[in-house]
Image (tube, rainbow, N blue to C red; front, side, top):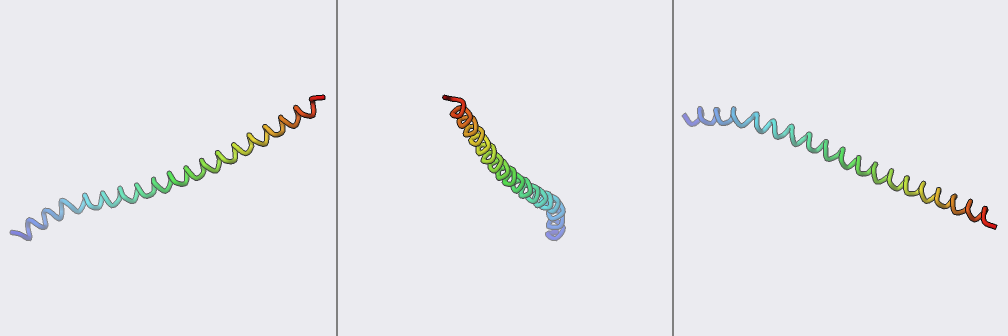
Length: 68
């Protein structure tokens, strides 16, 4: 009787555990993707900021050259 109950419980719980394990793997992948996106975003932001600074410097230099 106890074995029968344990078997039923095991059959009910096993799919849940497998589903949770699969969800955990997906969550790990999503978190890794988020980290990669954040890193890429940070790198792109630095590059854009640097380009803006360069353009500002060029504009200032051109204005100085235009001023008598």
